[in-house]
Amino acid sequence: MKLILSTSNLMTGGGSTVIRQPITAKSNVELINALRSNFQTSQQLSTSTDRAPTSEPTPKAQQYLSWTREENDTLYIPAIDFSQRGLAEERCQYDITVKLFYLPGIPASRRCAHTREAIDLVLKELHVDSIDLLIVSFPGILFDAEDDSEDEVSSNSGSEEPDDFDSIIRTWRTLEGLQERGLISQLGVAEFGSERLARFLPYTKIKPSVDQINLKDCCVVPKSLILYAKQENIQLLTHNDCMDILPIGTTRELLGPGEKGAGILASAPKAEDGIQGDVEPQWVVKYTAVVKDRGVVENKGYFALADVGSSWRLWLYYE
Image 1 (cartoon, rainbow, N blue to C red):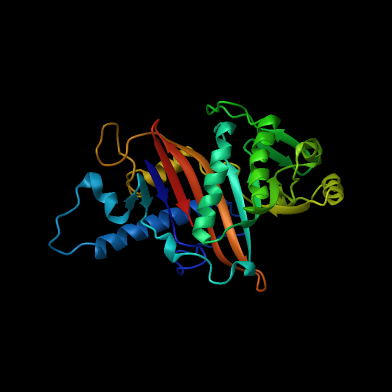
Image 2: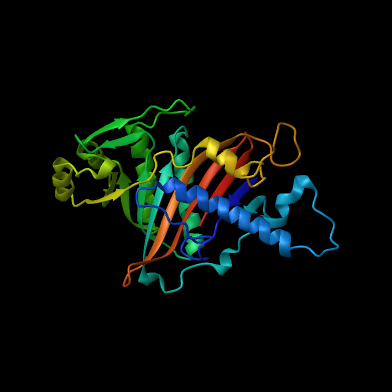
């Protein structure tokens, strides 16, 4: 069974939904706070409006059903109606950018399915047929702004295959296919220095239009990367996103019992107060829709996917 978790659009809903933080704050702070806030809001609304005073109380093991919706073996948490969403103006008025984080420890062989699933959710949420830019972030890649070198961090979390150069190329083939089908206008990468770009580009049919890098402590972009990007017509952008944007422990806390949890996961083995199984986050996707002529972000959000146990798949959705 799938579980799709959601929050409201970050750019709407007043102070309780729009969570501001310093420019130096990492993006997972925004993600976690917004998910938790929307879960709590939905639970409170359900408690105050969903039942008449004479209604029988919901059994503890089914309390989350009062603010969720199940359809075709999928549980939406909280209940959402995609037909009521979308952009306020015509599609041509927007620049839509999406960043997809492939998380550490997840086999690269799953990325073809993950990529299409993530893009489909964004298209459905915004009521559009395509996005303008997709940036992909591969796990284990660090950008060193001081010497323009790239180091790969090994993962010991059980990945079936390493996140090596071959897996990156295989993943890129999937992205090229989506662009050829018209779902994506431009592709981008994250944390690629000049050496990795020079190695990567000869294997691509469609080269990246953007390279997004994390500059620690506001470091200057290396001259070698600036020159190479200019030569290849690649735009350089910066970000402050986390490499591990949704850790396992954080996901378990969000969905588990307790004061900060949503009460979706069981409190103990064999307990009947929630879903049984271990949580393993798979990917996170962030998207923004900007009104071109005003430069205003109208819609911003996240989706995320995790596995629960051996037979459950958990969708985390953050709009």
